[in-house]
Image (cartoon, rainbow over all chains, first blue to last red; front, side):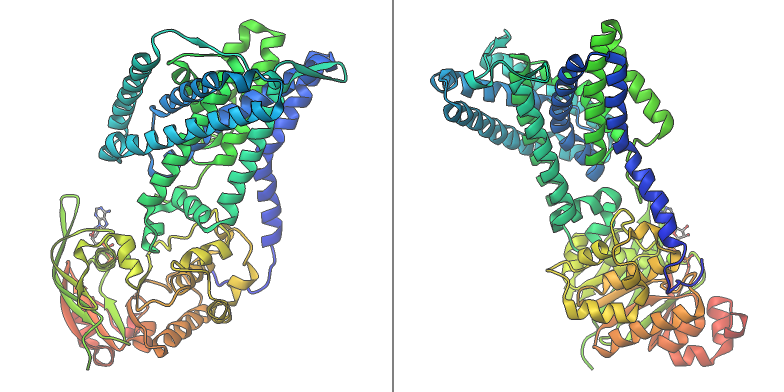
Length: 343
Length: 240
Ligand SMILES: Nc1ncnc2c1ncn2[C@@H]1O[C@H](COP(=O)(O)OP(=O)(O)OP(=O)(O)O)[C@@H](O)[C@H]1O
Ligand SMILES: [Mg+2]
């Protein structure tokens, strides 16, 4: 260690290189999109697949964002996160079914009002459920990973069974609201309206989350807490309160993801969240656990790759995500945007 | 004289199965710089972390402004007016220098006048204000850690080896900043291996050995008595 230079010498050069290193993962998305273009050949199919890959990616991101922050902040592995996805879907879809007159009308206003109410109800319930889950199930096992896995999987099973009790054992089919049905055609490519909406919602949410994390004090506390929780406390912030807030917000977002995924698939089951968890964990891990931006990139890569591969070589669709995870972890073992841990 | 700002009475701390602090007693008088000295591994850092609450005191009392801190969580101790500069600096390296400083001001926005004062004391921070703190040099991180603790006016500062690894010119800068803090009536408990700095800054000294306080007195007395230094710390000023 030497004295601090008062000038700005080599520092600027280093940071340029560093910045490029940080931007690299973001570049993977356009690279994949371009590769997809050449592999697929037909521009219209490519556009359709790209939109649907982005839509899928955005929905996975919405589910993964809470999970990755919860892990980053308190080292909590929450397998119960999938339960919030399922509960959100059942609450939201129930509201939509109850508002059948609104969703069946050919009025964008009525349709969107119904969707808004469904989402609000789903997020409120899953947010509250997340709060209870944190207090009852997660809090007693802070710092013990094995126990966390066991009890959160237990919580997941219990909640899934409760869904069976309340809504019955069968899957529920759902029609999208009238104005969200069908596709629009652009340059010969059919793009489902609903997927475009999902891309829009995901993008807005990501930008909003980024703004909160970068521009607000609470966001600073969260980012600092992911890196060095004890120091955040030593500065006078109650990290536990922040953590509960993040847990509740993450649960509510999982609920939103559930509603969106349900409308995407047009069918919901109690186990849907659990099944999504595989992708959600892949996304959180390749993004770098604790990094919202990493999860965003990871989710888009997973969504795009899955759609391209399913079109090109359907048999490989299932392994494509695992292959992606392997490749990325070989490149960056801590994920694309690794979080520096001071602990 | 008024009550001391901080009083430790028979404080014991265990780390895992080890009994590290074995009855630590001392006082930090208000508005003074108290040096916490001793050889490596005697428990200085553990003492600061116990005051801050990062380690839990098994027994004894930690009175801050007359109030027992032992029951308070770490964050409440900070909000009660204690600033902490840990030995490892605790810099948030993913955040910019500015963001680190903003977090240092716990109870509100960073006061512009205070910011000006700190940037005058540590000009390098201004140079790298918008850079990621992780890219700073070791000495710059050291300054950021101290400036961050000072970003808000606190009553008592616990500072663990602020001059570690710093070049002499920067040590002087650091010492001046601490002097200004003292001139504002703030109290400082300072762990310092550099005996010259200790001598220049300290009003009183607390010397530890093997998890206990073995000597307390005026810093000037310790500084002028080489045999005492030799006895207490196995060193004399010349040796440094
Ligand atoms: N996390 C820990 N686990 C186990 N033992 C620890 C831990 N932290 C400190 N110790 C032990 O506690 C004793 C006191 O350590 P401490 O860091 O307080 O010493 P110190 O006086 O600050 O030393 P130095 O001058 O080297 O910084 C040492 O023997 C150390 O090995
Ligand atoms: Mg130490």
